[in-house]
Structures are given as structure tokens and as C-alpha cells.
Length: 517
Ligand code: KIV
Ligand code: ZN
Image 1 (cartoon, rainbow, N blue to C red):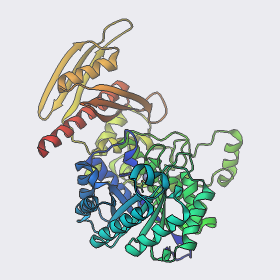
Image 2: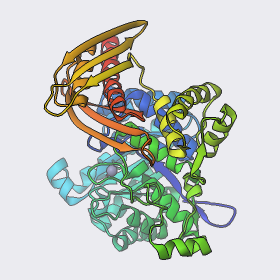
Image 3: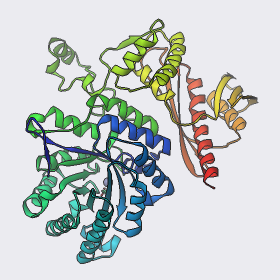
Image 4: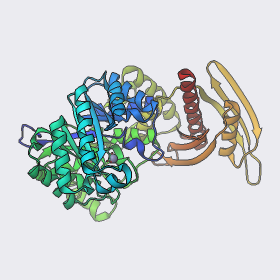
């Protein structure tokens, strides 16, 4: 079952699982506010289905799915459940308030999973899968079933499971390559086989969910579309278990750029791809590599002289997509000290951000401060400001000022002032291994929280000596990891802000625990 569009091409449903499979990436866990912010961005991107989480997995997951179900409109909101009554009931409890809910039930079908993980035979699997789908369908008309590890499941048995679950009420059947084992020809065959042999296959949307262990997730998903799949499951920046999932931006742009071949289209607002990718990178702390297709910093950079010459003569000699179509800025240098709020607001809109008047005012104030320190302001500077100012973590502590005296062979001396509510606190201490360490120790002392710094990364947002530095830190506190991000033209100040951001996240998490108790 697939939808046709006016031009006669098929409409491919884009199912985003950044908040569920993507969050399973090591180090990518997100808090409630961050998940809601990403869900909003996914709606603006035009994603058809948002898999918001796995409600039975933890109280945090349940709360996130429920909040997204309550507050997000414009996309189907989906929650994952095993084929167990308690999972399905919990998923429905979380999804109940959604305008367009979907329950996604799954059960592994491959011989390896049946024998070693589930200790069930084929008939048990069929019974459980059908019962799970029926229970979900009793709550909700929109039910997806996934035979986990489908790509390694015997073809005949997979056909039986798919037919039985469609009969039981599944409106979408998703074919996962759970371990990233398939190749494009193989994946195409799996989909073709189901389309040719399952008698009721037209009663459901056939979907694909590919992992990237062999770097083939996008290629396998495209092969599935070519063979007739009508839904693709994917994540922003390709986040996900192990090597990740099919990357949303890559599959969408492949379908669009090669519509001559696939005759398929999506509802994605492609100019939102880069802002959404940046948002997810900043929230998770997992940045994309420079040469990542579509959204990487080098994706549209032409270095070789021959290429540059060709580009100047005719852009299409070396460019198959326009950078502006995926949300990269069209002009390099944008604004400066004398630019007003209206110019900033129009630039922000052109960059694909939808900010309200209050948010524009906040970004404008930060922009003016930056313009005093930096002559030329690029789109990337503005994007960094928006992402910093729009962060959803409440600020318990903020930086007032710092000073560090340090030098070769000297113990650094840091003086730090922080604001907490209406109060200002200060400290001075001589310790640490260099100025950054001294500032971090001073922050720990004032905040009364001790952490272990697990990673510290600095990179420049744009070019030039006065470029803003972006610092990302990851710290461990009481067995949990917290991220922090700070930007400034002064890299030590950016480090202090990033460390404080992590402290504020710890404080917010502690506060949430106290409220729950
Ligand atoms: O990879 C997988 O099999 C999954 C399922 C739950 C769809 O993520
Ligand atoms: Zn998966």
C-alpha cells in the first residue's frame, strides 16, 4: 500500500527514530526538554512519523513519549513495545493523548534469535506476534509490526509472519536489518519476495529499517524502495545502535536528487536538514564528520582547481545538489556591527529557523555582544548563537567573570564569579593543571558538585583569528554522563560556559529527582 502523488511518483513515508533508536547510540541520551525540542524540529522538517521512545524501558522514556504525544502536533507519534501485554499497555498509556498515535510492536523472527534469545519455536513466535498486534490494534487503529532481524529470517517463515500480522491488524509491516548484515541486492530481494508472495501485502505499508554496520544502511534502504517499500525508517545524522541507522538526510536527498530513477518523493522540507542536523549534534554532543554527505562541513566545498574552474563556468559540472536546498547558507559573509534586528530576523528565517519575536530579541542581544568582538559575522556564527540561546536547560548558575594567571611551570591562579538567582558568589584558588583545569576546579568548588571530566573538545565555528570557539565537554557525576556546550570568541570563556552548562544539567537532573520523590 503506497500513496501516489500528483506527478505519478510514489510518496515515501519518512519514519524518524532519532529519539528511540538514535538515542540508543552510546553517549546520546537526551533529557525531556531536549527530546521535545527535537520532536518540534522533526515536525518542522516534515517527518511523517516520529518514534518518540520505548515507554516501558524507563520512567524517563515513558514521560518523554507522553509529553511529545501531548504537545506535538502535525506528525504521527509512535511508541515502541515488545509483544508483551505490559509493554503494549504502557505504550498506549503514553501515546493516548496523541492526535495521531501509532503503536509499534516487535518480536524477533530469525533462527538465531528464536533459539538463543527467545527460546521459542516458529509457532510460538507466530502466536506471540499475532497476539501482540491484536492487543495493540484493540487500542489504536495505527499499528506497526517489526519482525526483528528480518533480514536474517528464513524467507518462507518471514512471509508467514507478515501475512499473519497483517491479518491481525498491522497497518505497517517493517522489515529490519537489525544487525546491518544485508547488502542492497539482498534487501531488494527480501522486499520483492514479500510483495510477490504475501497475499494480503497490499493491506499494509511495507517499511524498511536498516542498520549501518557495513556502511550500507542508505544503499539497502534505497534498494528496498526500488523493490516497493513505502516507508523508510531513519535517523538524523544516522545516529543509532552501534554504527547507526540509515541517515535521514542522505536517503531523502538521494530520493529527491534521483527522482528520475526512483520516481518517489517525500514530504521533507529539505532546507531544514542542516539546522535539524546541527540541533541533534549539539543536543547529543555527537558531531558529524566534515565529509559527511549532505550535512558535513565539506559536503559542498570544492577544493581542486579543476573543480573550482568548472563550478565557475557551470555549477552543475561538479554539483548535483544546491547547498541552499539542504539548508546551507547561500552567502558567506552576512551581517556586522551595524546590522539591525530586522536584518538578523530575515537572515535567521532564510537559514530555516522559525523563531518567535522574543527568541529573536534574545538572539539579537547575543548578536550585538558578538558584533562588538568580531568584525565579520557568518551564518555559522548565527547558527551557534541560536543554538546556544535556545537551549532548553534552565540556568541555575551563569558566568559573571573569570580571571586566570598562568604560565610555564607555574601553578595557575583562577578568580571566578558566578551568579545563582539574584546572588553572586566568588572564589579564588591556586591549583590545577593549566588554566582550563583551574577554571573547572573553581566552578566545581562554587557549585559544590564534583565531577570527572571525560572529554573536552574545542573547535572553531568559522574562520579567522577572531572566530568563535565551540567547546563540548562530557563529565561524569554519580555514575551518569552529562554534556555541556559553550561558545565564545575567548576559548577559555567558552570552556567555562561549557562546564557550567554541564553543571546546570546535573542540577536540573537532581531537581527532577527531588520533584519525583
Ligand atoms: O533494529 C531493529 O530491529 C529495531 C526494531 C525494534 C525495529 O530497532
Ligand atoms: Zn534498529
